[in-house]
Length: 240
Image (cartoon, rainbow, N blue to C red; front, top):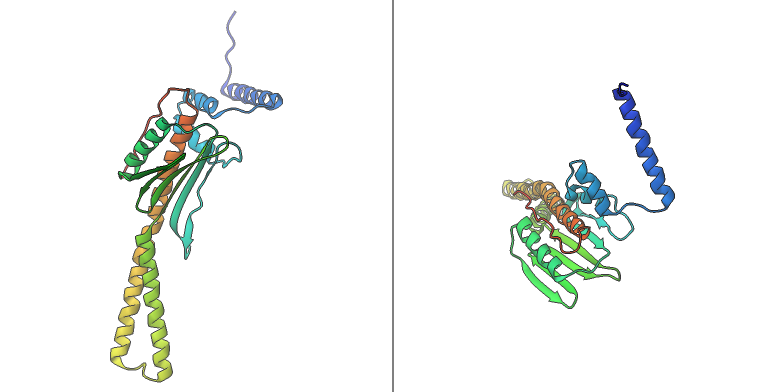
């Protein structure tokens, strides 16, 4: 007897029905799937555990694991970036060593380590990583601010404001037509605009890069949290 051959349309329909059946079975059982289970399925499909962890974190769930990125802005430009993750398991000395190594490689900076009881901190200028205990596990906060670009924008806007105020004062006094005054005001306005533009141009790219780096780190922390006890997560570096 010849074994039946299924067409492409039939194959697609079979997998669709099987997927729906699995989903209904999971829903009826009242149980979901853990990150480790999702990563195992993804691994069989050729996806990395880190990619699965990033996708899970992007849902910003309200359960035991969550990540948030709330960039601060100035004039609509991102000047600060942050990322937070909560994990429902204890934070060990080995976890801290792995995290510090990951931070140093990812940000290409040695940083300064500080510990106060169960609170741990790694800082490099405005870049900070804070580990805080929670009732069920720990919370990792990553945050940074681009003070240089922010300062350029502020000084540039200040220069523009001063030039505008000076022009108004000279106009009221009736001396705005003085060539020397006009040249000075114009130069101050040009310099201010140039500084503000230079700072503004740096911020979007910087924010995207820092956000991506922080997401990579939190994804590796989440992935490591789903590994069996004694397993070591792989640490990668974000290209410069």
